[in-house]
Length: 289
Image (tube, rainbow, N blue to C red; front, side, top):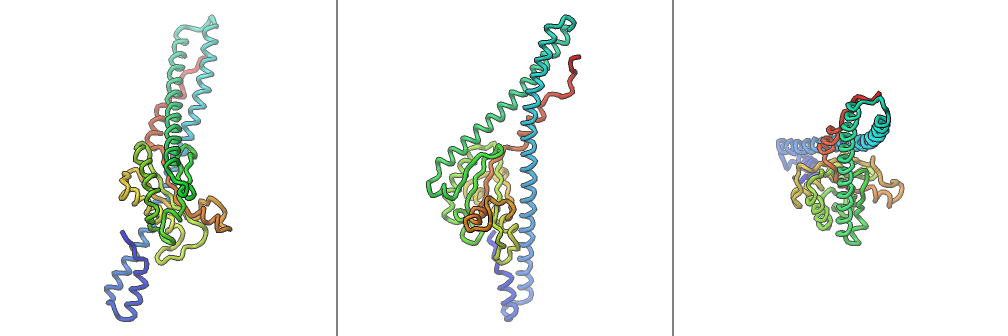
């Protein structure tokens, strides 16, 4: 949808000079109001995206805590089993139960460890493949790294958008094609696209503030990934962080340039994390005396 940001100003001028009717002006005013509503919805969606990502990170951290807890439990159970074997007062039934608990805990630990290893390996492979596909000039504007169990791709505004707008530039085509290939080749991940700005207030008609601008940039990138590069829209989420997620200080031109960026984050699917957590053996199993 192409948005004409000067619609209200033009309509007001034309109405003043008598070139259009009040009905036409009201129609233009209605379009403007719809644009304001769309921008508000994008900002809300961005906040929801942040909440979803935080929940996913919390669940991943919970999985890591369970690995540590289960490893300690396995050590404790093994120690108890050794005592049972050497103790003359321990019955065969209790020993059998301990063996079963050991097997259950050990299997769950192996599944968690294997899942984390697979995820880490895939993240490293995606990072390596994308980095190797970028040209030297592109590497000046694109940062690819693994952070908190996810692949973070940060693209500078100067490469991704037309100057002073949120419209995708023709020069961004090669980079977006390479990023979308990595995304399309790895179906088991979701994609979060987050727009960021510097601290200078936006001065574009019909865009209220940096929240609007960051959300609109993310939305433009998402639509390009979907419509031009065939990324499944069900895997995509767009959000904006305004000026509140800086990569550098805003007191220098270099810092402000680094802060004006769009992050494309390849994340594990939340349902896969939940499936592993739900497989955890009960923590209240009978303990040996």
